[in-house]
Image (cartoon, rainbow, N blue to C red):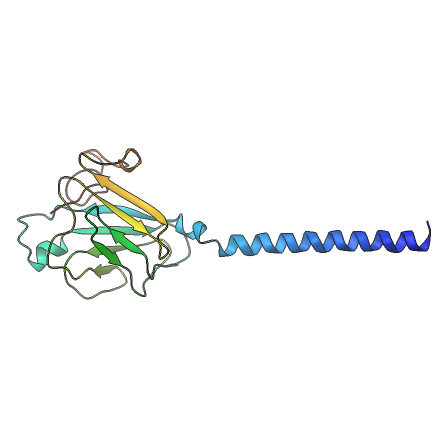
Length: 180
């Protein structure tokens, strides 16, 4: 083999190795930074739309209406700017909140002191319709994360956990049910 062929072959091998390393590091960086990976672990786990007792707009009644968001992943997720909304356009925006790994937060309709496990929308009226509504969770950029609906207008994919014998079914503190 001539010297020029040997140098050319070494340059080609070096270029191929460098390109492979670049592609490998780019794919690792992209997957580590991809918010869809983390977002897939966050879901609406339960909805209590029909507060027990009489809906009288008292603090007790309003705070007995809530939605739970669960992070089933091991790592915490920054929910700052994420929104939780109903079909009527009522929207709650998470403000500087981080949901820990394997943790759940309950978002109450009424007033209260925010903690790591309970957040409050500070509303004076019910949000979730008892008969038919949907709770939708979106990222700070408006990307869909999860939705749970109940009643006559619920979507095909949103009747997860429905049924009276299921802990997440209709009535009380259940997945897929809510109301005012």
